[in-house]
Amino acid sequence: MSYATLLADAPGVVTATLVEPGQVVVAGQAAIRVARLTEKEVVVAIPETLLTRAKSGEAQVSIWSEPGKRHVAKLRELAPSADPATRTYLAKFSMPDAGSDVQLGMTATLILSDPASDRVARLPLSALFDQGDGPSLYVVDSKTGAITLKRVTVKSYESSDVLVSGGVAEGAEVVALGVQKLDPAQKVRVVSSLSF
Image 1: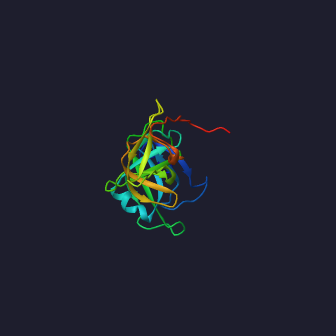
Image 2: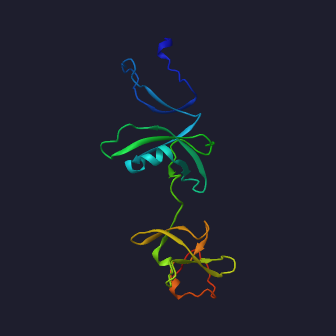
Image 3: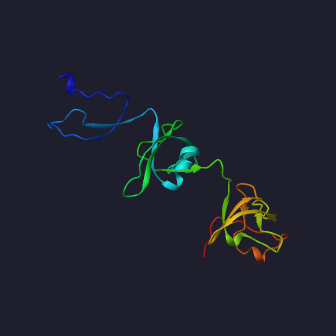
């Protein structure tokens, strides 16, 4: 009778029962799937263009229920071949510092960063202002409403966006529309939402 008792090798939660009562099973057949509680993981499908970044870059996980909080993630397992339907590679990232607020089955966003690349900001093309001496942005002081024209370094242009790699501090508020009508002596009012 002791052979009929299944014991897990670690504490966890049963996520799936793969056999039915009275079913005859063969040796090695999976009967119950258990998710361990020791260390949580994120399972993602990675396109082949991001494989190098997933292997060598730094990863962070943001849980949808707490979008402002980021957890450090480490690549634990990467599928050796692509899925034939989606052409993506299944990857598992462990989250060593995840607490009890991260529950099984939650939806998360994986952020991969490449240490070799520069940090850039994506802005609409309408935010750039150029009077012939190079691209600039109007940076707003949210407390006083004063604006300052600052030269920026543009990394690349896209169809409707521009990637800025330097010139303004991270988290700075910039004017996105109507920059051609502004003057540095003017003041603006920052609004969080528009109402019509």
